[in-house]
Image (cartoon, rainbow over all chains, first blue to last red; front, side, top):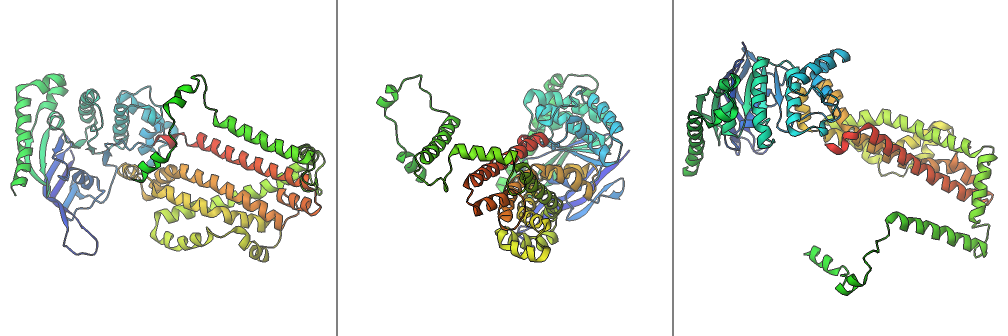
Amino acid sequence: MSVLTFRNVSLRYPARPGRGSAGEKLVLDTINLQIASNELVAVIGRSGSGKTSLLNLAAGFLDPSAGTITVDGEPVRGPDADRAVVFQDDALYPWLDARDNIAFPFKLKGVPLAERRARADTLLDRVGLANAGDRRIWELSGGMRQRVGIARALAAEPRFLLLDEPLGALDALTRTRMQEFLLRIKAESGAGALLITHSIEEALLLGTRVVVLSPNPGRLTAEIEAGFNAEVLNGASVAAVKASPLFKRMHAGLTGLIHATSDEEMAA
Amino acid sequence: MTLSTEIGALPQRTEAEETARPRTARPLPVAVISAITVVLIIGAWGLASAYALVSPVFLPSPRQVVLALYNLVAKGFVDATLAEHVGASLTRIFGALIASIVIGIPAGIAIGTSRVGRGILDPIVEFLRPLPPLAYLPLIIIWVGIGEASKITVIALSMLPSIILSTSAGVRAVSKDHVNAARSLGASRWQVLAEVVLPSSVPSILTGIRIALGAGWTTLVAAELVAATSGIGFMIQSAAQFLVTDIVIAGIIVIALIAILLEYIARLIERRLVPWASHR
């Protein structure tokens, strides 16, 4: 069991270089958050609340201005394969076909060509794209691309999956299917996950925990446990779960929480 | 504001004209218009020489030029056949191309990825880029001698800037997500460079090579006019000295055809090598 920990993490952007602390922007303020391997922590918040900055910190693309981020007690020093990122715009390599995109992390480790292709084929099979290995990236639909992106992240054998609105660019039907897919693949992989999303419904459905990030500066204002992902994993249909009274009540509650933060802001 | 006036200034077809035009009439394709132009030019040329409007010494007839071309292929001119002249020229340009790729791509990567690299190489490239290669040809001859090396050096120097600049532009245009993805999948700095930055710059590098080939070809012919004992430019220069204008014109046509062919091959390679370039 691994744990990804944010301890008193703050992030500031200097407004303009050479102007000292004046005009500095506090993006994230004293974030405390723990994500364990058996969890999928969904972060929701309005745009500008620093959701993506939070993920970039976890990935190691950004360094915190204060506080520490650790994986199993080891401080995070830059990006690493133990925290693989899935991007909203897939970030697949167009010069490689689907199979070689998935095999990319194996290539980085120096796995021989035949073996890495065979292992990529296993992953292709796992994400339901057994016949798409030779396809060019631009020949794949948005949903298929994200499956390839997720398979590529899994190929790095990460302890944590960092999901930056991975389903954000998909149409509604594909999105629902991909939500269930994401849950299963995450559960099978045994990796912990941090999911950034702007969809309350998605956060509630997928997250074992949902945290609300309020903007200006980004603060964690609420944290709730959610059990709907277990229901889906146990075979309940996504549609039925979303239609249940409890889901609707929690959805309304979260909506209220997010709007409350924006109302406060307006009052201030 | 300018836009509306420009549109207003465009000739507007009246409704009467529109209806008067038969529905079946289609506008001529550009290729047909071009073909007609070429035929007209050659026709005018033929007429001008047939009626001796210009002295045949200055303007041989098209038939004479075709004949000269045939003789060039069969017998040659100044101790070498056309194939040998073209071969000498192509050897120089490809030698220079290889040299400028070997130097230009690493230099472009250095400019695109490192502040120090940019600081060192930028002034050199910016100095070299606007210089007409013939301006430094005499100096190169003094330094390197009149052999092949001086010609290859000058041609390579004329090719270098576009290869360096297109490489550095390609390197700088690499997608941030592509780089970040590789880093989060465990890539080292060198692996990011080799596996992401370089492949994603290939379309830009190939464009640079295509432009470089054009520049190199121009320089090659010019360099051969000045200092060479073989090559297509030398052939033209020798023919001109003896007022053999049909060979001069035949040579010019060969130069143009090779330039078009090189461009075509370069585009073909681009399409083969980076089919994904148009799908980013």
